[in-house]
Image (tube, rainbow over the protein chains, first blue to last red):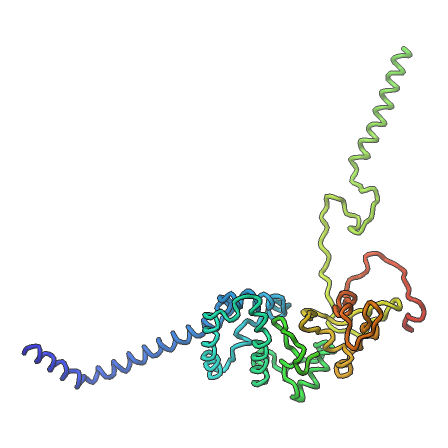
Length: 197
Length: 156
């Protein structure tokens, strides 16, 4: 009986909170919201680093080794582009979409889709085509995140670049990825890729 | 007396000769030998030379003899030539050269080693950099007065 009374009075208290309690709960919710959102973001950004990407041996032993020989890895000025700079969109909404799509990659890891060099090379073309399609679709936005076309100084470029950039690129027929395939990783079999040899 | 004189003279001459020999060995001199290392002694460590750079893009370089594979006047960093793709041919093949504004590969690239002519690049000529190289801004180590034949020397 006394228990019942206790529960009743407790329930009564809960049903009619103090004014200050409401404010406190609001404030606590706000603080926890920040902590949660910050934590979520930190975790997501942690998955957006080169270190994270190469924690899978499929990436470290194949594409990372290829990337290490390229200009985006080491160059005169030391300004680099690592895995997420090219492969993960910068705008938040597109980034979230990409992150959700990445769950497929987790599946691929668990099932060992490309876990040997042979398997990786067999699927290289499929993976490359997917990335090229994505880049073509967003007008090579990841390239443009760093390489701003409007501020390209053609007088500093070599002759061939100056010619190509001032014509095909300027007219919008082509986007960065159309010519700069293989800038970071070894090319797959290019025999039936249009716009290539 | 004579014996003593003779002994003295002999020792004197020996002493003189040996002193000359000894000082010659102690001299800091590589004997006037000039090599690619310059005048440096064996035990000296000379400063390293400056790094040589490949010019990013320049006009075509004149050939020095008729059958010379032309030099590559631009940088070729990371250009892949393998069974999957040939970056050179992406501009220099007969299919692409006009659009790319590049020199096309010559007829010789289509012949097999048995003299048969193929309709695409022969495998023996597929790996461009086995014959074609680009040039860094390194001066010749040894001065030479080589001149190409008149026909190949550009009019100054």
